[in-house]
Amino acid sequence: MDELPIGRRVAYWRNRRKMSQQVFADRLGKSKSWVDKVERGVRRLDKLSVTSEIADVLQVDVQLLLGREPERRPESMNCIDQIEVAEIRSALERYDQISAFFYAPPEPPPIVEMRKATAHAWQTLLHAKWGMLARVLPKLLRDAQAADTAYAGSEHAEEAARLLGQVYQITSSAMRRMGELDLGWLAADRSIAVSQRAGDHLLAGVATARVALALRALGRHRSALEVNVNIANRLCPGAEQADPDRLSVYGFLLLQGAMAASCLGDSATMHDLLNAAEDAAQGVGADANHYWTSFGPTNVLLHRAAAAVELGEGGAAVAVHESINPHVFNALVPERRAHHFIDMARGFTQVGDIARAGEMLLECDAIAPAEVRCRPIAHEVMSDVLRRTKGSPPLQVADLAEQMGVGV
Image 1: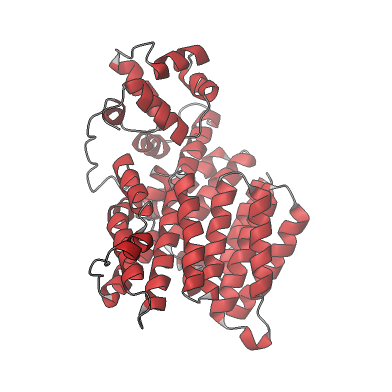
Image 2: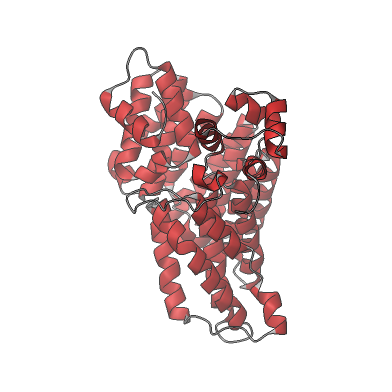
């Protein structure tokens, strides 16, 4: 894309961010006509200050708009940059299986190495280390795709497909959280097909929930609700199937269905699904991470609070939050706890307790900095906290906002 005129690059990133010319113009404080002329090259962008403002609105490095190679972020900046997104996109666009139809597949990585790399990627996701994860995902995707193709028809075929399905799910989660919704949906959708080929119904069930998460992020809440409930009904365990793995996947689907229902304002369905998930969680017992679901009684409570926030019932969310056993909560993986703190920051703003909302963001930053500094939703919450704070915000909150790049 470096050879394109700057106006075309602006149009490319605007479309990637799914903004209309009017929305983009409004955020810039310009007219739609001005944006149209810039994108068609009729109007020149000869002021760096204006180009930098455009880059801020589009959430890209200004060097990308100028057709130059952006500086790589230091290791301490634990966010996903646009170079890494481009590399992940490129890896997702590979079609090794069809290439292998015409050419001999390359030497695949050993299955044992793929197993270790995939397990490490899961741990990186569960600790919300998004920058670290982004740096390993492109190679992991390529290796997993190559292994799936090369081992087809061998004794390792199902395990290779199962590992690729997991890598697609990890990629989907990371991309969705970073606001790359199209990539989140694509990776989740591919995970379903691969999981079916692996003969793993539970992995396909988790992949379905990831697709539904992507649909919900895209605003398609009805479709998300239907797909979660449909597959949950298919996986509903009988007495002889009530093992922790199946119960966890079943419960995970119910929780995501409840969240979709809350986004639709359907509180009755939401509560029905949450109650069914609570029953499944009692069958699992203590909170665990069967099939990478982090499912259990405490996670059901976290979703009760999150669903209440989506309904605008901040008081109910706060009540659930205060009922959670702190010792059990602190044993959950960092990503789950950090996600809950962001939900509760929203909940406390709904009840007008802006000081507690700020505290929630600080708690999130203490256990998983990338979750609050990199996620678009966290930036929106911080902006709301700053806007509604009377007078100057507390020093720690102001410092965090500055590090997040959110104006005080």
